[in-house]
Length: 349
Image 1: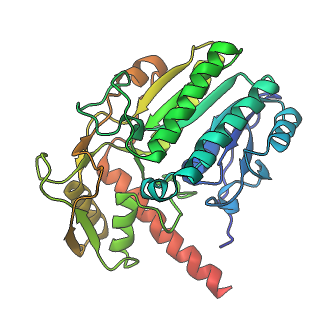
Image 2: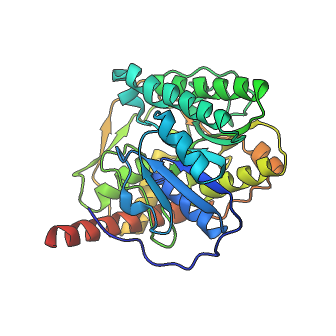
């Protein structure tokens, strides 16, 4: 599918330095690119387009189609663009796929991240922001989950991300190199201006799937278990709007540039919504009931996973702007409708 993002006036450049965004053609990465452009940053994107989309990167951004594991390519890009910071999103994120293909996930998420970190150190790029995950906590026994609880991932996906956190910690100890690792909870929604959103057809996120069901792209929606120890028996998750998440990355960049030391932060709102809460929100947004069916529990689903979010608010002065489930769902549904229109237009042409 080929189409262009809606035009927007950006604030311009702020200097000769640039920020490299790996995976900048993907869901969260494309929102990060827009956030950086809005802040007046020079931006370079590397993406192999295995799951990302070239159209998701605005034309004014330097785009390199390539793999972060290709160190010669990456180091040339770092040098040629005078990169002073890297924001790293590239990787694989589907938990069940990591169980069936663990070595592929360790290759893509851990081995290639190691190569990217080494490329940064070789080229003197000392600021690094890493896209980590709440999956490093595994079956958390407390809620909300704080950053200093025991880390016990139960999937290769979570383990691959935790191993990268360890590499960053050790690299920061040995080199002139500082990082921020942001542990995402459940990222959802889309750009409020309709410029980008979750575009991967096979995405497994509940809000994405529920919106697809609302628009007839799926014939029903499964609820995996109604017997959890939660208020309505369904799993509770901390849903964070993707634009608030992108803003957290920008604040992490400012933090490192101001001399902030390496740190790890949860990215969530500190409160959760159940599966049934999400379904009701989608039904309100679309104006009709969904075909909801019961299904067995999925292995490894904790009853509740909510972020302890005080650390990021205090250290980065992060103040979310979209902390509202109905707003998150409305933006997600709007993007799904836009995708349908764009796909129909693409077929017609």
